[in-house]
Image 1: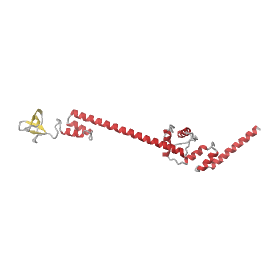
Image 2: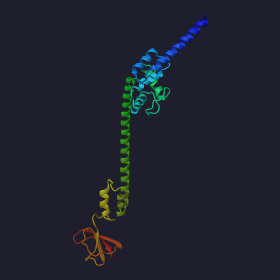
Image 3: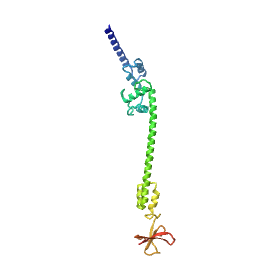
Image 4: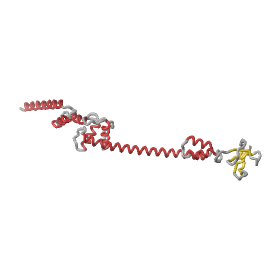
Length: 248
């Protein structure tokens, strides 16, 4: 009797499987109503994963939307792995992350998304993406500010070095290194004075007041140039302007 009962149960089981197989084969994956009808009849059936995949596929999520879903999962602590927009099959990291999120929200742990679930995760992903962009912009601004500060420090150091040497060549070197430097105008002015700090063009002339000597300074009148040899004592012109006597 027991054997007969077991045989009947086995036949019934085989018949039920065959009926489910026939039912699923008749379902068009693109038909939401047909897929939902299968799930209502067989909520734990052998094709539920395929059914949920069909329903998710009907959402039409493009790759950008899937990236947002993954970012949303990551934002709430369910790491989906790389945010590459690829969900993959039932056992991928993204599917496991979806199931974990669904479990935390007391939803059916299918690993596949409904429209409402997808919208919720995409909104979370969008918020996370905006926060990431703001943070990156802040980091970039800080990096630019640091680079600008370092550039100013280097500019100041180069100009200080030129001032320490205090020659036309030193100021020319500074201007070559920092053609748009913050001390450009001062360097140009000091470069034009030559090596003695006299602003303007210095002309060396014969001086009638002291034969055999020449006077150098911004106050003199042009005359025949002489070759400077040694610097003499500081004196003044007839008008009282200071100058430097140079033996020729």
